Image 1 (cartoon, rainbow, N blue to C red):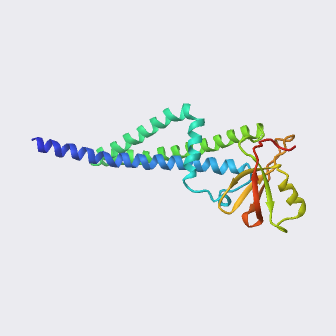
Image 2 (image 1 turned 90 degrees about the vertical axis):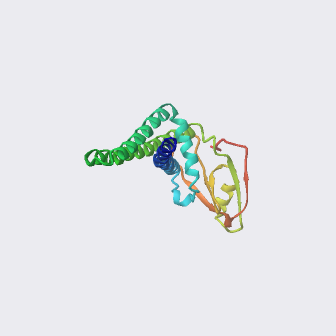
Image 3 (image 1 turned 180 degrees about the vertical axis):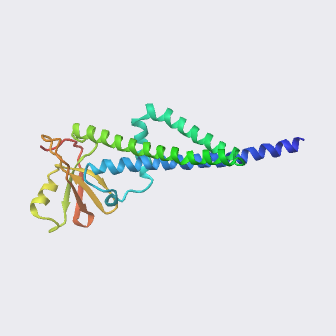
Length: 216
């Protein structure tokens, strides 16, 4: 009797793993979607595409943390409710696997819920990107330090080379072979941002300054 009960418990535990694994897959996919949406729209305000930035995929999960942080009050309880609902659906799908009507009913409802979940995560990423962009713009981009770029001889016209050395540009981001800089106009904060991409092959040296104010 004890051996039979142990076998039943082992079977129950094993049957619980697929639900947990499925929930973890959905969780990571949702986090990735919200992080990707944030990055796509946020850097879009700087007129820079994600393909040009060549961001590592794991950074999207870091961006998703910002989405969670800015929307934690409503996101945590809603997220727990949705994932509990998905877990219940997975359980009911397995339980009613011998009942064709109930099985297909629960099975058809699962993609609808997942679609709504991914849609919500995408919209939250968009909303958070806009919110953070407006905050940066109104405060004169306090997250981006001024930078001086000294180019190799003949890399750019003299006027641009002089402008890059003035320390009026701000560093947006850099990857393995490029640095992205922009020059905000403090007196016209509503002006669209134009981002300049400078390849490392054209740079002799760079200096980040402990300054976070625009020249104008």
